Image 1 (spheres, one colour):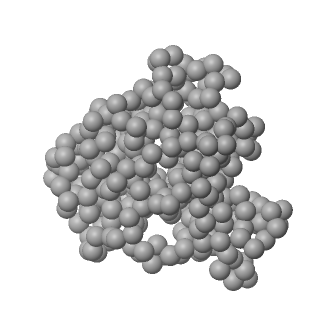
Image 2 (tube, one colour):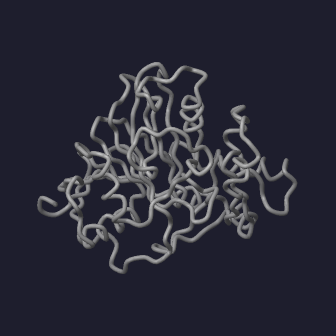
Image 3 (cartoon, one colour):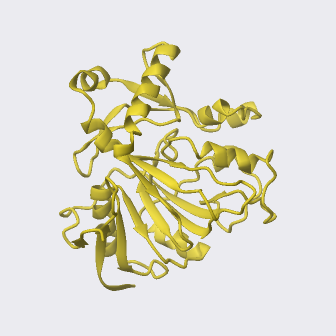
Length: 306
C-alpha cells in the first residue's frame, strides 16, 4: 500500500542512487508500483527505502514481485540456516544458534569476502538482478555498504581501452574470491556445484541501452588470454571502475531496505568490529531479460537532495 505518489530524493553528494518515499513495503505491491520501481532502478541503480519494518515473509513477498529468487552460494555451502526461507541470505556475523560467531568461524570468512568488490551471483546463469538488503541490527561504527556504477565506469574509459576490451569475455567462478582469502576447505562436489559462467566485459543494458563495464572479484580470467595477463587486465579494470567518483557509500540505519542492480553496479561491505552484532537479510532476484515497457520514471516525482 502506498501513501500517494512515490517520491525520489536524489542522495546528497553522491554520483548516483536515490531515496524513495511514500511507500510501505510491508504491504503487497501492485504491478504498476513494481514497474515504477524498476524504471527508477534503470536510472539510479540503487534505491534506499528508510524505516521499513519487514518480517521474513513480507521481505520475500516484496522480492518475489520482481521475479524468481536466487539461492546464490547456498547451492554450494548449504548447512544450518536461521531463516524460514532458503532464498533469504543471512548477511550477518551471527551463527544459526543466534550467537555472534567466533573469529575462525565460516560466517566471519563470509563477512570478510563481502568486503571485496563484487556483484551477487555473477558466477552463474542466470545471474542476479536485484538484491534487496534489509537492516535488522547495525554496529555502532563501520559496516557501511559501498556501490560502484559500472555504467559510469564504462563511459569514462579511454577510447583505446574500450576498443581493446570490446569483444573480450571474462570467466566468473563462485569460489574464486574465497580462495583469495585462504578459504579453500571445499569438497570436489562443492567446487563443482556451480560451474563457472562466462560474461562479456562490455554489455548493453537491455532496458536502457547503456553500456556496462561488467567486472568484479568473481571474474578470474579472460578467455583467450594467459591467466597472468587476464588477471592483470581485470585488476586494472576493477581499479578503474571503483574510483571514488563512481562510488556511493550507504550508512545503514535499522529498518533500511536498499535495492541495487547487480548487472549495473558493484558493491562491497566496509570494515566493522566483527565482535559486534550486525544483522541484515537479503533477498535476490534472478535476471530476466524481458522488461516491462514504459517511459523511464515518468510516474515518479523527483526532488533535489536536501
